[in-house]
Length: 467
Image (cartoon, rainbow, N blue to C red; front, side, top):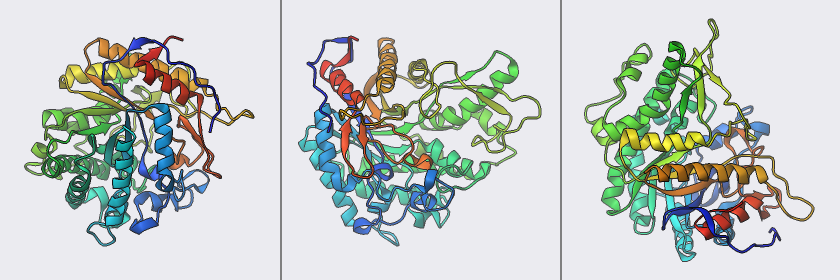
C-alpha cells in the first residue's frame, strides 16, 4: 500500500449536487481471473485471448487482478478512497451452467460481493453484459443469432431474482457498439469475426437483448433502476466542406443514433438505413422489436474517452479494416493537443458537448458518466508512491467539463472513474494501465496512486478542490 500522507479535505471549488454518486468502474473479465473456478464456463474472451496473435504478448484474463479471491481487499480500497458507488459487471459465463441453466455458485459469488459492498456503505451498480458472452452461445451464432437475446433475458431474470433487492442500478449492456462493430465487424475484439452485415445484425440483437432484459428486470425486481451504458461520442467534422459534413453524419449515425434512436425514439435512423441498404435489408428487425427496445429506462450511462474528428478520405484511399459499415472512405483525424498512453486525444469539451446533446435531442433524462479515465505508463517509485499527475489533470478537466454540463441544466447524477484497478485491457493485454490503483501482476500487491488520493479529496469535498 502507498504510504503517501493523507491531507485534510479541502473546500470544493466546483461543488457537485448533493447525493452525487462518486464511483469507480471495472469489468469482470478484466479483473476477476479464476476463469475455471466454481463452474465458470469459457467466454468468447477466453477463446479470443488464447488464440495466437489476438492480444498483446499473448496476455489473457486467466488471473488478471485476481479480484475473484481478493474482493474484500478491493472493497477496503474503495472504502479508503471514499467511493459512494461501485460499478462492476457480472460474468454471464459464471452464472450460466454448462449446457444451459443456472450455476448457483456463480450467483453466490456476486451475492457475497454485493453484500460486502452494502456493508461498506457502497452502492452496487451492476452491468449484466460487459462483452464476455459464453462461448457455448457464440458456437450457435452469438449475437448474430436472434435467440441469444432471449437467453440474455433469462439470465437477467435469474440475476435480478437473486440480487434485485440490493443492487442500486442495473446497466443491461456496456458499449454494444464495441460488441457489435469490433467483435463482429472489424474482428479486433472477441469473437473476432469480420463483416459489416453481421455487425449490423449483432447490433440489433444486442439492442433487442437490452429491451428484453429491461422487461425481465422490471418483472423480477420491481422498483429497480435500469439503464444502459453507451460509448457515445462527440463526432465533429474536420471542416465545413459537404463531404466532411457527410462523413461526420455517417459516423455519428453509426456510433450514436443507431443506439440512441431506437431506445429513446422507437426507431432506427432513416439515413443510416438508407446508407447501409447495399449491405443489409434490415430483415432481422421483426415486428414488435422496436417497441421492446424502447422500453422506458430510468437513466442513461455514457462512457467517454475522446471526441472523433472526421472527414472524407482523400480520393482513392480506402480503409478496408474500418469497423464502421459504409466508413471505408472516412478519415479519422487526431484532435490537436495532448494524448493519453493509448494515443487518445485529451479533450474534455467532448464530454460537456455530449451531455448537452443528450438533453437537447433525447430529453431531460438522468445521466451518469459510467466510464471516464486515461491510461498512462505508471510505475511504483522507490518510496512506494505512484505519481500520476497526467491522470489527475485528465480527471480534473473532465469533471470540470461535467460540472459545466450540470450548470447548463443536465441532470447528471454520478461519475465513475475508469478504472478502479489496473487490469487486462482487452487486446492490449496488460500493457496499458487505466487504474487509480496500481496492481503488480506478479505479486497482486495493490498501491493507491496519487490519483486515488486526489479522488478521495474530491469525494470528501463534494467537488473539485482548489488547486
